[in-house]
Image (cartoon, rainbow, N blue to C red):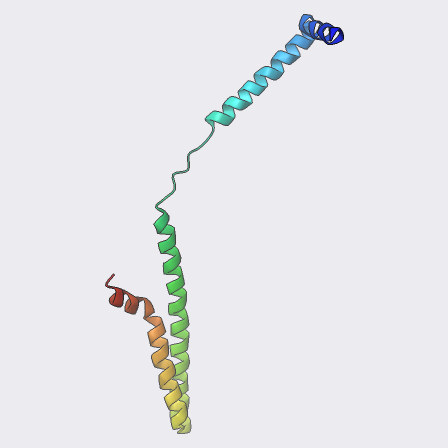
Amino acid sequence: MKNRMKKLTMLLTNKKAYERTRSLYRKGVLAASVACFAVVPAFAADPLSAITQLSDFIFALIKAVGLMVSGWGVLQVGMSIQSHDPSQRTQGILCLVGGLLIMFAKDILDLITGG
C-alpha cells in the first residue's frame, strides 16, 4: 500500500507524467463528446412504403411471367394453325388465357377486394 502511494505521488509530482495523464484525459473526454454529439438520427420513412414497394416489385415479376406464358400460348396457337392440330390449338388457347389471368392478377385482386 505504501509503495503504491509512493508511485502515485511520484506521478503527480512529476511534471512530464502529469502532462501525459492530463493529455490522455483530454483526449478521452474529447472522444466521448464526439461520440455523444455525432449521433445522427435516422428519419425512417413510413414502414408501410417499403412493404408496398416490395409488393409492387413482386407483382411486376408476376406480370412478366404472365406475359411470357401468354407469348408461349400465342406461339402454340400459331403452330397449331400451321400443323392443323386441334389439341395443340386448345392447349395454346388455354395457355394464352392463363397467361392473361396471371398478367392481370393484381388488377383482378384489386377489383375483388375493392381497393
